[in-house]
Amino acid sequence: MGVRVRGAHHRHVQHSRQPDIVDKPPGADEQGPVLASPQRDPGVRHGGGGSPHRPSKPLRSMGTRIGGKKRPRAARLTRRGLLTGALGGAAALAGGGAGGRGGTGRPFGIPAVLAASTAPVKIGVLLPYSKVYQQLGEDITSGMMLYVESAGWKAGGRTITLIKEDEDIDPQVALRKARKLIEGNNVDLLAGLVSSASALAIRDLVHNSKTLLVIANAGANAVTRARRSPFIFRISFSNWQTAYPIGGWFYENVARSCVVGGSDYAAGREDISAFKESYLASQGRILGEVYPPLNNTDYAPYIGQMQRLRPEAVFVFFAGSDAVRFVSQAAQYGLLREARLVGPGFLVEEDVLPAQGMNALGTYSCLHWALTLQKPENLAFTRAYRDRWKREATVYAMQGYDAARVIIEALTTTGGDTVNKTGLIEAMASVKFASPRGAVAFDPDTHNVIQTVYLRQVRQVKDALHNVVFHDLGVFRDPG
Image (tube, rainbow, N blue to C red; front, side, top):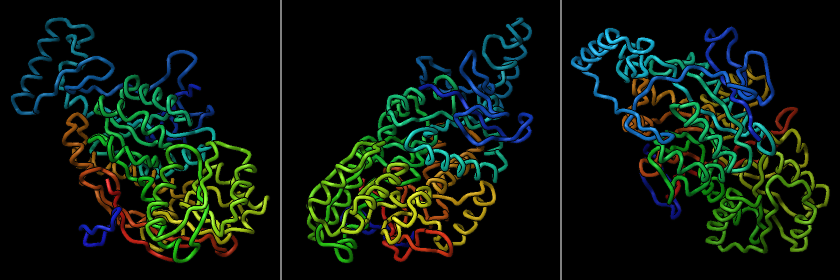
């Protein structure tokens, strides 16, 4: 990309069961697509309470095992293959095969590649639509749908269908839902995931079933490091990328000593570890560490622990409703009067700022996007999102938007072919574009996104609070 890219050592390179919810393009049913919601809405197809109403499964063939059943390998499509397929169809008709299929499961012996290419491409969307990260899931979904709508619900000549499941915050629930999408709904690709724990839980299922997954949020480092898979791409961030970049700046501009903490699960622990890596290398001093449980409601004892250490500043990881509750209670118990508040951008992102109000004013954070980022692509995206959904975009919406773009561009390159996994992986690995956040590309070794990270501060912008970018920290790739 011709830009400086930083790694761990500043190396330089070039550069409970929820129902199915199905979104289909306008015209596929009487109504157009409906935003995912765990409640029943008109025009949204639901499962449960009997046989779920789902779109027809695409007729595919691949030499892999999914759900314990081996499917025949798709033959290379040649003129001879077409003729053979046609003759096979004629023979099936002559032989009186059941339903005219000749026992192949494909109408009149149509070759698998042709059958798949004419069926809708089914994308399983696994995101939280309840509990602490509900808003994150809804924002990612809205971003994805905005891009899919802009593409006319088509990719590589095939119609797109989204099948959604609630990720919950329990990784075992996420694993069960992922298995349902892959083995029950027979999806062609997976997208989504907010929780790092969920991403780690489904990794082996995705890898062993050879299902391509585009992660739209979950930042667990191991997913693109020790446990990376050629079938997994991450367009959001690694947890290292959202905290390591700010450590040196924090030491020089905020405090030489601090207390750190965050939600006690993979993301919270990894973000704090990444911050400590760069902060301690700058000679900063950690006074103490505090880790409340995920989806916590009472932060008083944890805030008390921080206050007893008398820090100049605190660096914390919280997101979603946890971020709202922590900031509110930190103000209530006096922590924000005694110490400066800094953290990864999720702490004060656009989804939580309205509820945090003036308590968040002045907070510093680092992240790979901001609503106010002055780039043409971001101005166009935020305007389109506001027009479509009647609310402001968030980093989660942007990540969903980019995740859908990655999938559609890859499918366009393959001509809609989802059977040839090698070709689809190669097409996805080569995707790069000017995102609302800036230039993005995939690391060829890890499939994690390479992107710019910004310093932001919550400021009054006209009649509302927003994160304003005031410094570019550089382009960062996860050290892998």
